[in-house]
Image (cartoon, rainbow, N blue to C red; front, side, top):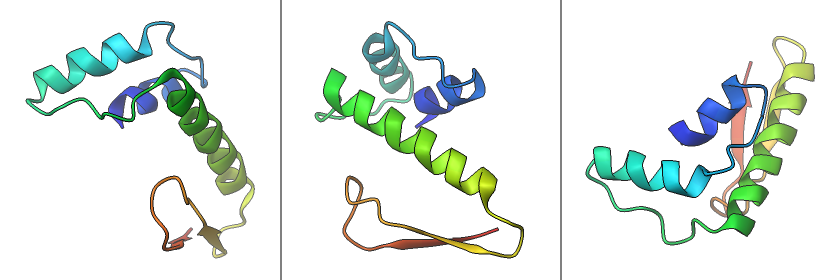
Length: 81
C-alpha cells in the first residue's frame, strides 16, 4: 500500500517503475511481493484509489460513504467522515 500512497501524495502521478519499487519495498519489509501485482492490476488499483479519493473528498462531514471494493473483498465497507 505504501507504494500507492507515495503516488497519491505526489498528485496521483504514476511511477514508471512501480513494480520494481514494489519488489524492493517488499524485500525491505521481508514480505513476498503480491502475485497479483501486474501492470493491469496496478492500473486498476490506481483508478479505484483515485475515484475513491475524489468521492471521499466530496463527501460532507458527518456523511457515510459505502465502498464496494469487489477487487479487495466481497463485503462492503462503511467509512465515516
